[in-house]
Image (cartoon, rainbow, N blue to C red; front, side, top):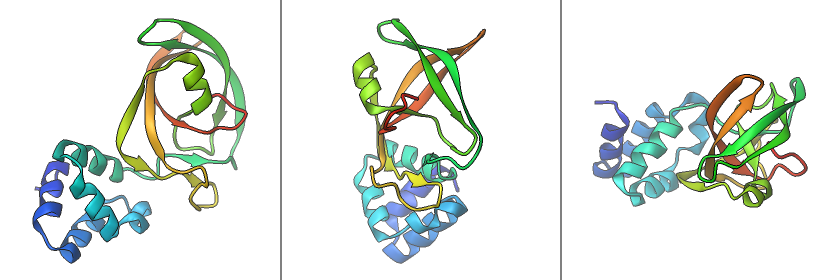
Length: 166
């Protein structure tokens, strides 16, 4: 009990009011406002494996916050497309006021990065806690990011960053 798979089954076999209570208990405390009857319907409409992935995401705090109130700096990093193995070097914004890693939609298109759909869109919040007008995260890309002598495969949310690339 109380695994994402167990919660997914309970959302499907319980009445709406009880499902909302179960999901409220499961969801991260800072995401409680997202829990409602529409979310239950949305989760129940997904294939069960996607419902489980969406529930695992709801367990985490708000992942993507745009806008900066913290310290920021630009660093040079090398990005490698995992499908084509082509690399490009960019200046990326490091922002201590942002809780998720994002990459610009137009840059993803230019570089030909393979997009992967997220089972349930992830709301984007501004630094003041309001929903971002550009909408939710619906896709991510997985790329190799190298900074100096350190390299990691990262999953980056695809969104509109305006003038920034990453």
